[in-house]
Length: 157
Image (cartoon, rainbow, N blue to C red; front, side, top):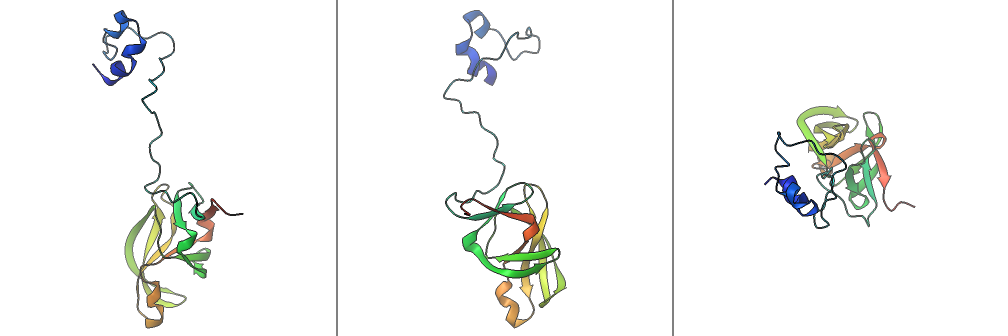
């Protein structure tokens, strides 16, 4: 028996339950499909790789609403991205990292890797891989997300 037969066998008359419902040679079914049993839970596939706790204020991707960071991980709001203002975060979720490359930014030479939303693939900002000046070492391993790519989500009043 196939999966559809197992799920629907108890809902059909005996002469239909014994037939091969999954066979390509079976007669086409007329009428609506039977309801799935109560114990079978049909749900959507998981969209994001990680979900942040509902009780905290968080930031999400402005394009697809994937969770990105908790407000508790925000380090600074006074950063400049390539397209405007940006925030510096200690950690983020649901982002992918590109290859690291050296760039001269406003605060000097850094090795950075572009980050993108894993769900919609939009470039969000970058990750500081290495800072070459001692005064900028605190940025290493931190993330920049530009404001125009994120929204405040959950718990902001």
